Image (cartoon, rainbow, N blue to C red; front, side, top):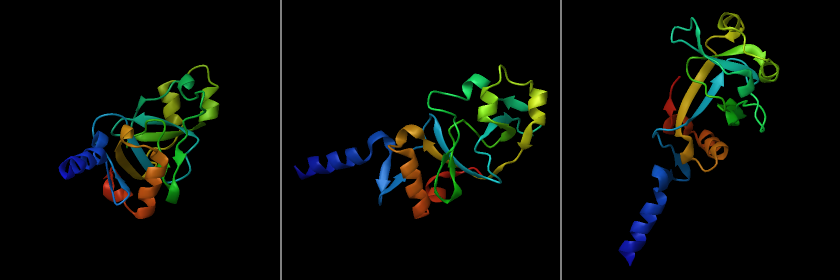
Length: 163
């Protein structure tokens, strides 16, 4: 019976490849949508992000105006503790921010052409930190678990530092 109880506890603690160690979440870096946490040089929370080429000379991806407003509102980042932000749009290391806000962009009939949009970029290298915290499905409550890692000093230890 002791063996069965031990096996049950081990299996329960490893559900979905995630573990809690000393009350702190351990990220799961399997395939799927990843949780990206970041800080920027200035407040770009309401600005539309686009993705630039690796050399930052052209826009390679941008949202359609109809994509930036949902029933839940605009996909602005979630504010976390200590100045961190949780991405809700799909940014990466090559993201930049336009001078136009989500609200303004959503009112457009169509996206500006890429050359016009490129001229609207306010910061080509906006990030001071970017951290990948693994598969979003591994979290029970993303915001609470990230804030716990931030408070405990574990965010940069448990997650993958991109910048």
